[in-house]
Image (cartoon, rainbow, N blue to C red):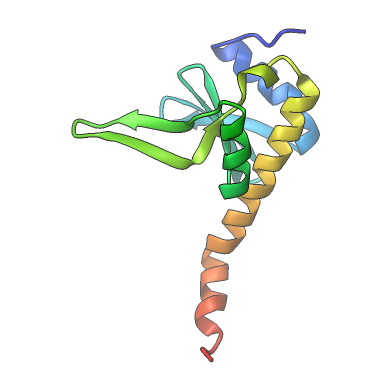
Amino acid sequence: MSAPKPGDEWIAYLVDVLAPLGAVRARRFFGGHGFVVGDVQFAFVSQGTCYLRADAALAAELESLGSEPFRYRTRLREVRVASYWSLPEAELDDEEALVRWGARALRVAGAVRRKTSPKAARARRATPAR
């Protein structure tokens, strides 16, 4: 089955395909849609492109497959967001690959969230320096 793209049908398709990751839901996100499991956003779609949350290792792998980081323009410059990379075009028609990529992005996003959560920050402050 070929993935429908872009539009609301594609968003619904991605939510359905990514269901093995948990209770995936799409929510409005800066003119596109963010994909969330629980309270962790691991991907988003903007202007017909799906971007995955990535750490340095995942970003390097995605880049080797031709992916690009999310970019947007302001009045003054182009901003490059290194924490989100496009889903490789070759993977769009492979539902199993979409789930694998989504699972990896969800792990990265969850790890970042745990590291930067207010609770984790309080724990770091409470730990005496050595």
